[in-house]
Length: 558
Image (cartoon, helix red, strand yellow):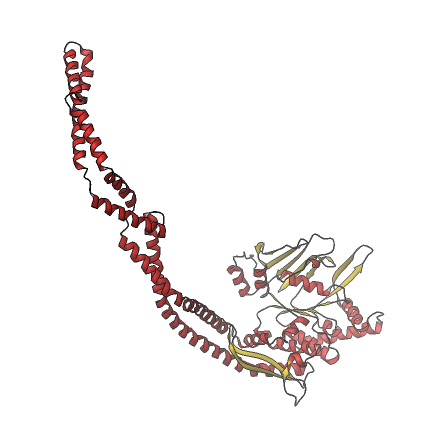
């Protein structure tokens, strides 16, 4: 439940600290004093959209802090799911800071969170019901949720939603595969052509460079042989290099017999003579190995032309061509698998369709079983709230399957006997909407896990006996949970377990709102003001005291 609320620089509230108890907490005050601002602040700390106009004039920022205690296990599980630290005592501290620049920040137990996370967690802490919530009764698409809450369909509905979304996913994938099926045949033909052409070419990495060198040799074989023959002649003719080296070596060896310093040079010359002999043998071998082969030259030219054509189509070199082959083989495999995937998805589609229809039928049965009980309970509540002639009907029409199932649920009412029930939006007045909403909330009270309910001026358009009945119903609803109610009715204020007065003070330079917890005497005076307006008399205060005593007696009887 909401234990403490601190508001800083929100509208006319410079700073306010509010404490709330279990049971019925009531906020009263003159129109414009700032009661709705407290609700705006609570909405802000729950992650709802805010406007920079909410920030107090002249302030750079605003801040709202809320402390919740005795939170439900579901909330603690949500904190774990979002990796938010838990406090030792299990409480939840939420802070929302609004900047005049338009930015805002949210923290839960000191951990930064997004506004979406804050809304999800805040929705499990507080439900706010006001005149706009009465408008929810005018939206048939929300009526199904009321039935599900009473029926306890949360697990069944979640199972259905999971199956339904899986079905939608399979349909989307199948549609995409169906759409691409016509293009697939042409693509497969192209891929098969690419694969066949490259595989038949038997491309080898580095092949083109090797062939280019071989072609250059064959094309210039005559020149190569002539050059090698000239080299052999220079080495081997009568006065060639080999003969000169041998003569030089013999002369140096003769000198070395008597001159030791000549020995190294003599050895080098003799080695050079031997090496020149080896060079002659190599040159003759090379000359013999070079053969002009026109057929081989033509074969190489054709192969190089083929490789150049493949390069122009599939890549810059042999590695790129082979990568194109690998990519084509992989893509062809995927396309061939898609046929099997279509068959697999079609089987899944049939199975999921059956599952979704079965679960939708279970939801329908559960809702319609609950509908009769819901109608009876709501009409009992409405009779208590001075609407004895109203008939409340849950209408169900078959609808295309959606994430909510196959039901179109709408609440109908008949204001007078004999009249055909019609949609609430076409019949109910503002006061009737408030009571219908309160009746529904009271019926759903035990099914609602949220510990704190806020009612913002749901007594609009209500007076007399109906007001007294609403007050007693709010008191009944507050048993075992926390109710926070903004009201203009003294009868409701008299039922409060905690009564806070909101007043506005205007100075020459600013406007301030103050929030005061009233004692018994203060409550009597405030209730008298609510009933009489300005100029409260002692008789009216005494009457208010009697109203408070009556409320206390009623609580003792509950």
